Length: 211
Image 1 (cartoon, rainbow, N blue to C red):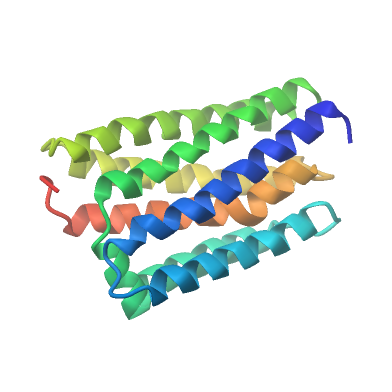
Image 2: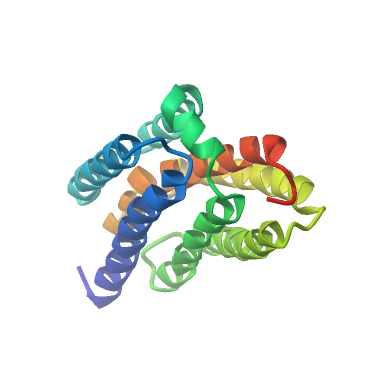
């Protein structure tokens, strides 16, 4: 592994740990007691440990990532205590978590270093940066009670979901073998950020605009 690959893996690892840790205070506001945040933290960190282990191997994540994304979305929205925690979370904080997608912009750098196919790295790296920038703007809009925040968030969540699924399809066709940093992104960050998008879309439908 050369210096660029180490840098990319470290960046994705940092974003993954940050995501796992930031989810806990985000849901804690709406959770009754400490059990839900504590169990969520333990589960995410255990999952991250497994993802780090498999990302350097030959495991293909093509089928795993969509299953994890759908499963995590169903878990957070379907299990009573978790759903109530997300329903009580700040929309500004929930949407703002997607700023972690700025890390996806490193795919452009990876493509320039021949670690990823140019079409894949450039297109979906740029898409991640655009979604992250929109997340920052939407987080600000929710914090200010902007009346357009709800519809804009619904459109953003839909576009983000389509972009994520399209990226997995293109990845399955073009990215072989899969570098470790991309494997970690796919095994952990992709399902987490996709599920957060689904939660944000759901919350945008039910949360007051002036939250």
